[in-house]
Image (cartoon, rainbow, N blue to C red; front, side, top):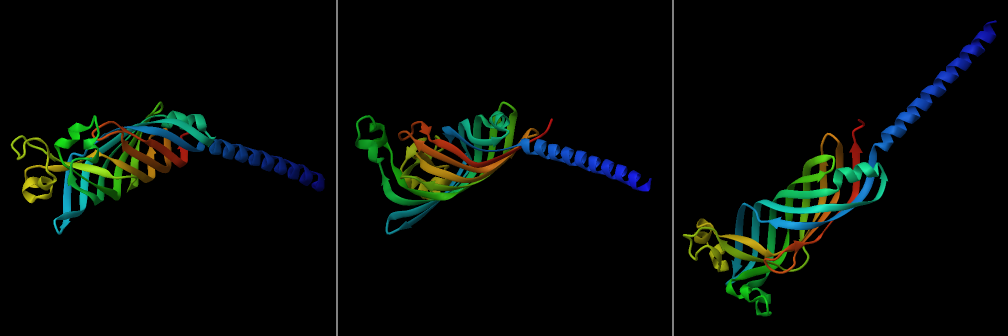
Length: 262
């Protein structure tokens, strides 16, 4: 009798263990299904200059060698339009990410000057005569930025941070903007020397990009109550022509998303 009872209880214990294992496996499968790995792509549509710009000029033998530019309140806007190479909860990834993307950031860059103050090189080209009316300084940009990153998809707003490195893709050009009507020269683009002088800076003159060609790359993390998303991001900013529209691809790689199980 003892042997039969033991065998009966042993069978019951095995059955309970199998059910528990199946439940655990199912739970693991559900948990795994609430994640996604993906890539994404989109495009830049706008760039807004910063609210505050500080510039330090390094001048030697009458030539500008480099300019350190610290800008706060810069903005870049665009749109994410596709999610691909996706595994897991891909529909949820699309719901979270497909929509507008924007950053407000602080940047510190160094412009290694290769083009001394003069009208923009395109000033002599028919259709760009307006560029002959003011000076620019050009060079290769390198630096870093810290951004507050916002993504607005169909499931709400994801907010977080990004740390990116800035690298020039070709020559970028800056002009000197005098910020007050009482300044000399009056409000508008003036000589680069105005921005390089302490007097000019005190009067509110700032360097502003008019022809930007850079790629920003790095890591980002955004979240809301619906999702947490991390990955690597690349943002290319190119002026179509000086003072003209901006364009450039946005790409997300090694993207990972975790979604809440409602």
